[in-house]
Length: 214
Picture: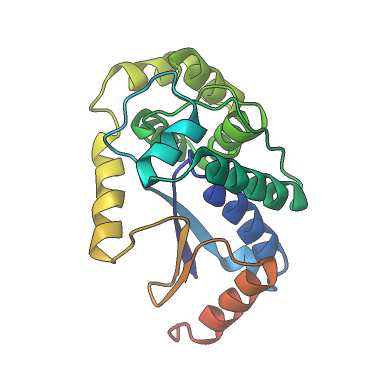
């Protein structure tokens, strides 16, 4: 059985959603027979890297009062901590995640995609290290077990793994995915947003029961 998960590293709900899914999968009896495929999604594809606070940037993007956006951050922090994740509020900056997605596809080629994703999520939310900084990106790649020279080469070539990112995004568009996290089980069932651990386990059980006969 295959589960495809669209996420953006800058998305707090993806950070929490992935952890809840992982816990739900751990409770699934047939977990060893599930292939998990992580796919790219950019919430802000036109974003430029800068120094603007993520709170101010997102509040402006959606026309929210700053206090409301702070409250949303606090809600995300509470949800993250409930599943054992670290979460800091106030130090993240707004930026473009396309290069991070390219690097994640490079990691996938070497069987280190999940490791890099987890490190990038932690760096962004728990440590408030800028995932848009080239030095940080290379450091995360090395922490994930990737070759430093190859990682630098990928990042310095804007076309490297760009087609893979765009293909994921086209597939999301074709399937009507407009927000993340979004989970697709066997291309038959869709689960949108941050669901409970139990809900993910139930969805896996249903998809398993309804899977096509071998």
